[in-house]
Length: 50
Image 1 (cartoon, rainbow, N blue to C red):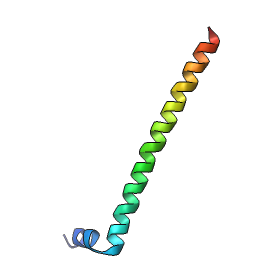
Image 2 (cartoon, helix red, strand yellow; image 1 turned 90 degrees about the vertical axis):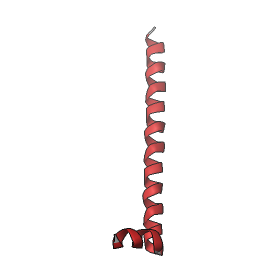
Image 3 (cartoon, rainbow, N blue to C red; image 1 turned 180 degrees about the horizontal axis):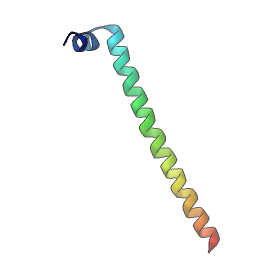
Image 4 (cartoon, helix red, strand yellow; image 1 turned 120 degrees about the horizontal axis):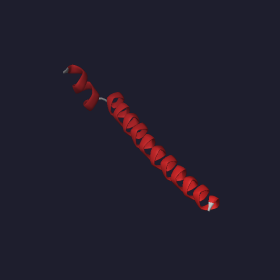
């Protein structure tokens, strides 16, 4: 319980939360970005085969 208190009440803990949130958001962004481009490339390759 002391660790959670430190996590949410100290500068270092708040920066850790911020860093973790930033990394999670960046991961979601990159997954969506890569999946969109994979789908576009797949559709383009299928159109070229026709």
